[in-house]
Image 1 (cartoon, rainbow, N blue to C red):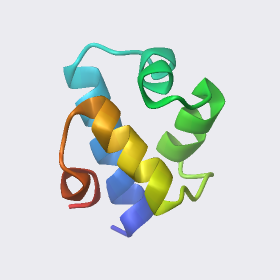
Image 2 (image 1 turned 180 degrees about the horizontal axis):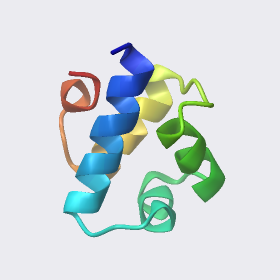
Image 3 (image 1 turned 30 degrees about the vertical axis):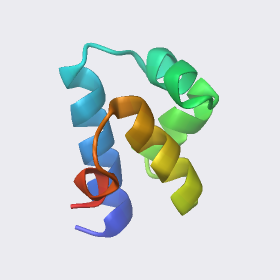
Image 4 (image 1 turned 135 degrees about the vertical axis):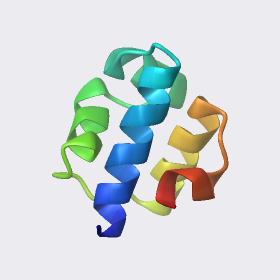
Length: 67
């Protein structure tokens, strides 16, 4: 599994564990819902800064999204 697959799977899992929609995560992270969707579908290649914002929104370690 490559890093984008791991990011997408971990992000989606953590989002669902919190009972959040993509829209809710996007609002928390200050991103557009379509961008969150693109990351989860592996069509977007987010910067480390964006991944850091998603981690902060999900209240998890950055590494938790990439492991």
